Length: 139
Image (tube, rainbow, N blue to C red; front, side, top):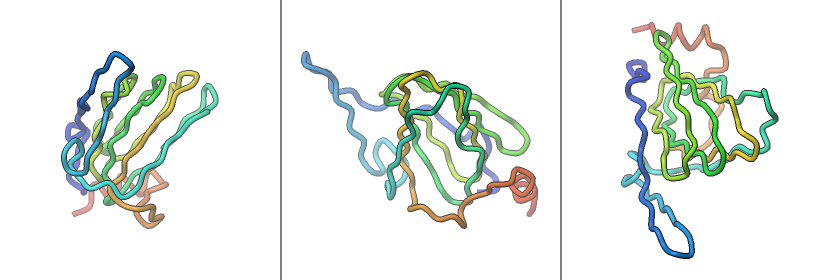
């Protein structure tokens, strides 16, 4: 959405089922995430000093979780930037549609787990920041 801002991003605490033999966290559609999950993917083995992301989405909503290690997500609405550090497997960042994102500062062994509201569609992507900001500022 053109009207989404970085302040629409929220940290979501995911439930922990703690047992003596280890923890379990489950995520259900429209319960822990405010959308039905249509796609799941994860990033791993990101070399030190490299970034991921560098794009925006028209419609896609996401819940992003650091399953292992840590990384930063800088969210940008064309006017304001906000950075979140993810480092716990029971905390996720909810990102509504209409925002630009950059992921960096990946620790060794980090795993970035993403739950997405729609299946992959290249037409949903902004790959050029100037086109993204032009879209955000249009009526």
